[in-house]
Every structure is written in C-alpha cells, then in structure tokens.
Length: 169
Figure 1 (tube, rainbow, N blue to C red):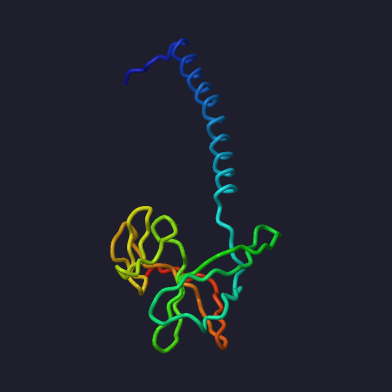
Figure 2 (cartoon, one colour):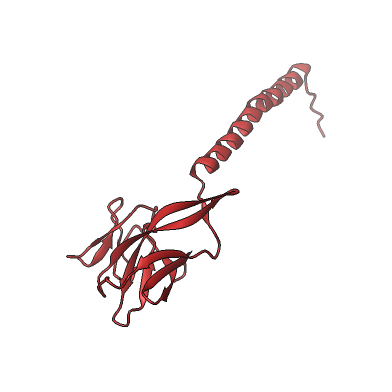
C-alpha cells in the first residue's frame, strides 16, 4: 500500500474551502428561511371556521336549471381574529329544487370563472379550463372537477357550509 502524504498547502486549501462554504451557506439558509416565512405570511390561505355555515340568502326567485352566482358573507379566522369576508358561489337548482353550490375558483390555479349560457359551460379566462353544468372538467389544464360547498335548505334559505374538495370525485 502506498501512503499518500497531504502537504501543508493542500490541507490549508481544503480548510479554506470548508470555511468559505460555511460562510456562503449560512446566509443562504437564513435568507431562504426568511423568504419562506414572508411568503407564507403574505400568500398563506386563511381558514374559514370549521363547521361554520354561511347564510347565502333566499333562493325562491332563482330559476331551476340555470347557474346563478350568489354573494354572501363568511366568517374567516386569522389567528385570534375573526372577520367577515365577502364570498360567492355558483348555485344550480334542479327540477326537484335540490341545490348544488360550486366554489367560484377554478381548480387549476384558483382564477375566477364565469358561466357562458350559449355554450352551457363554466369557462376560466386565465388558462382556458372549461367545466360542464355538473362541474366536471370538459377542457383542461384543470385536472379535477369544481369544488363544492356543503349545502342545506331551510324553507327557501340556502346555507353554505365548508368546501368539499373534489379530489377523487
């Protein structure tokens, strides 16, 4: 076996590389952690109160079979603070007056979509996704159906509950 001798110069060079790597690595680690924290603070999603139901109003004037957008207020929890937030939903009444309520956000990237009556499709202007009246994907890039609100009717008042994620639907 041959023994290799490490010269003093090679030893100093490897020590210098270790110190330089540490000096560059620590600030990168700190700045990455700070950037992630700021991003989470600025863009983090606020949570609606679990189990909370929002009164979406009287639906006795709504025609069956045609989607209608309704606006309502929902309680949102942000840390210890609870505030009311304006929200909306697309609702559809069928012949038996059963209600389906869709979230107003496209399942691709969360853009707002709209109903095109002549095409009988919900279309997203951002990236071209399209959904039929049942919320199923007709054209992508969206890969899953529209998310739905839990619903309940009390006389003619519509109550919207938590969103039901359409994953696996």
